[in-house]
Image (cartoon, rainbow, N blue to C red; front, side, top):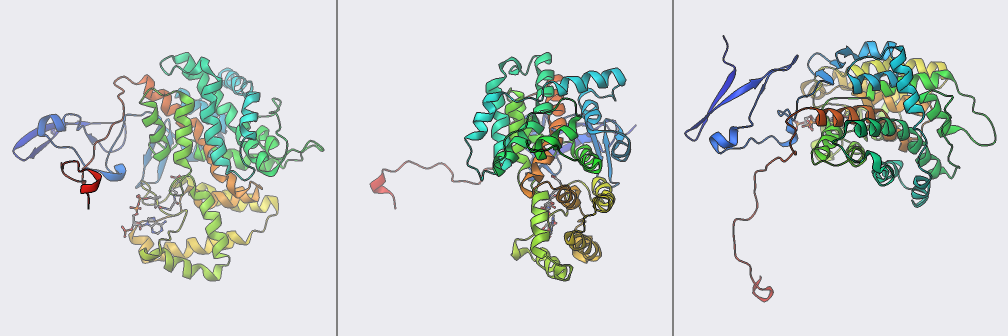
Length: 429
Ligand code: CMC
């Protein structure tokens, strides 16, 4: 029988570290007792070899390009499901039956209004505030409005906070956009389904009804499904870290929004579009590739590379196919698509990108679809946040339900000054 422990001896002290097996994927070495038994910590900046928790929500096999939500392949969910059903799946662990779905949709639909005071809060921003800044602050502010869901240790309160967050995120996101262009806020229309309701809040003007091409809602729903969860990525880990302190759901999710904003994470979709616009023409692609390979330039190909996927990102493959379909259906002829296709073609044949296992990720094509749907560039990461809210809150709930939760508190390798004596100001060099 294979040894179920990893045995480690360091500086004459030994530890027998148990292996932890999941239902799929490589086993992990449980180092909980490592410091106690050997006097050593582990060092893993960026957490590339560290499992921070047990989770039953999402599984990724980065070598094989596999992504499962609660065991269901992303390809099947993308083809057959819808975002709200996927949100239910992430939260509850099972696909809903018809009655469960109706109840869930009803609950979400009837929590879409934002507190009127949140409107005043939004009005306090300068007109050119980035919508991610407005979203992050407004979601954090919800904890000031909904005291009845402030206790993370109460399962009913946790559930209601989840419903409120999934329901209100599109309302606040659309309001942030409308504020930036000086349009009046639109109230949510409860006769519409989730994504269509959001599009109405974004684009409907008071003076005339909105004519919405169903292709737009369908494409956005697909993008929301693909972005709904991705196990312990930077923003989800942030939500869990903040959640581990006992912070309420709104504060924890606001922290996730802040983490998502960075260009190495969810901000990449906005950065991709800016990069493609800067490249401007397929004939400049070679120059961009050369710059991305030059470490001195500080430039990376946005929308390329992933910490976990080393072969392909299954979400990128689905989006790539959808991109052509959506642009054709909407009659959009976007020259940036040509630049993107050329960039992908050249990079995939380039030794640097092959050796570094850098492939287009989910954000590479999503921006081109968002642009075709007339979503403004500054709103791209907000779109990601709306979708990822389902995953964030599912993880936040799971962390409270799973026994043995502790505050996240990593250690460090200290490289600063060794002990020294304080000197009066006139005695300092
Ligand atoms: N362009 C050029 N070189 C790259 C790129 C890139 N996009 N990504 C990684 N590399 C190189 C990097 O310079 C390093 O080279 P070397 O080993 O020679 O020093 C090597 O590949 C490994 O890079 P890393 O930064 O250690 O990899 P990581 O796993 O820490 O970072 C990443 C992953 C996604 C942050 C990174 O690939 C990146 O910055 N990509 C561009 C931003 C992006 O598209 N982000 C979206 C990620 S997917 C959606 C999401 O998470 O929100």
